[in-house]
Length: 126
Image 1 (cartoon, rainbow, N blue to C red):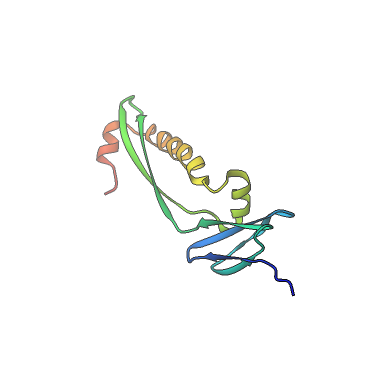
Image 2: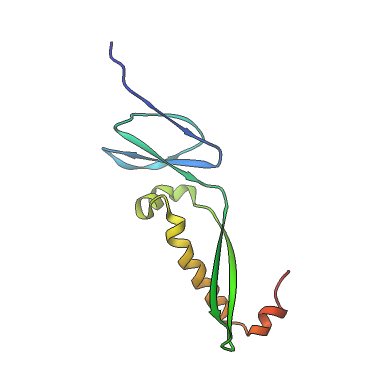
């Protein structure tokens, strides 16, 4: 009697796994919470945290009246579970470190450029 080796992948709450299969590539469906059985040399799980996480960016930016201000932006993000296989294929597991800093800084600078320096201080929401 022969046994087939198996790998046990545990996916915790707030996580999803993308499965890479050596023959089929990245599988189009993600794997949810729980214990999953995989073939060790054929399939490999890549675990993604799908909870909302904060990211903070600090940037010097010019205002409408050409004053330079130093601002911090706190951005809350989470990946779209349905698009995790595509995210993994195109950006890898460190997608947030590759994409969010450039988007966050560009949006911060675009918004700050619409206001004068005194408006940033007097019209801010507390």
